[in-house]
Length: 490
Image 1 (cartoon, helix red, strand yellow):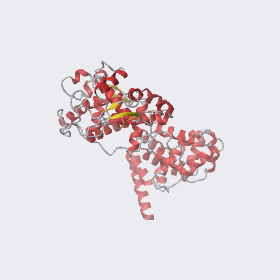
Image 2: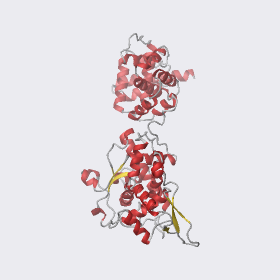
Image 3: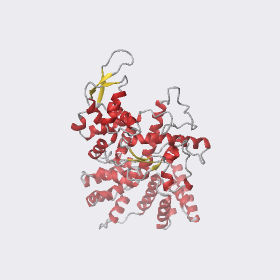
Image 4: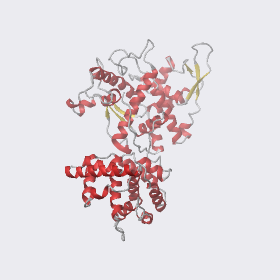
């Protein structure tokens, strides 16, 4: 299985009230509430709290699912969700093994109408977990687990699939879907397109670094697709995802073969299943990941933190996400106080300081004119003076003093170091390197002397990236001199 995942970018979540409305409208929770109100006190239930026989048939009727091919399955799912969310509970019953019980209203039922948005989202999350814990059918449509063959699952014993293995696999698939969604679409998350089911299955089955998947791996992907089709049909009822199922014709005889990407158009690919997280699904999976110890940030998480924590964190965010998070941090703060805090946090000679200064400069651009007094206060600071002059010049400010020559070269090194750490577009980085190196005459005769901890690494990067061989050679010579100077001083 793939491992060593990069950090997740933050997702922008919809307001709680909007998500709560979506949760109450989701079929599973809506049916669970209806069943909880219908069941009333005293209705009999099975030993495991389930509805069976005449009670199950009555529940199907109450939900308007009579005649539906999956009516009983949907009714059972809604009842499990009602139990899992605490909308109903089963008490007492006859003594002895296998005895059933009687239904009572659950303590959580009043929250449906009297609770706040967070209470409703808590109910929905518990209902979601009940659906996720459902053991799928051992065979048939949607029931072929992700085994090494399309036949019986080797993890399954006589009693059927291993629930722990099923839960672990589904958890990994949902985490992959979340990652694909937020990584592709930035903090907007749910605004992107659906994910093809073969691609999602492959993302958790094909090992990292594998070039052409083996026949065995492709067979596992095919089995997983059939298995996940049933899973996502059920999860679509929770409001977690929008799902276009696998074409039934592909499931008639055996698990579908993974489509060859270069041979199919969009309509062909869609026949193999398409899944998309809803805004409610983004909320639910982020909550699920956070509960399991995974760092799954949301825009606004840093709003109450100090400037140092903000600049350190957004250094690992994509540009849109960093801007959104910084905007939330600035909201409600006094512009001048915020600018002073950002500038103070940007100082330092540690390895992360160039990237902090880059994000400080970008944050100051969002502050606006209110930051100018704070920026002018650091014009003589050796670490911040260059940044301050650039900010003032970009805003057309008057009386900006020219920088001393050492500050010019220090800022050039700091700027390149920050963009190296940002790990952005390679072409943009090359253009930056060539622009800074070509802007100053005798650049390499001066820059190797710059008292910046990243000077040797920056010059080595210029030597790698610059397309002019002569300039690249000069950069490597300057890097050698910078390292020799640092070594002699040590």
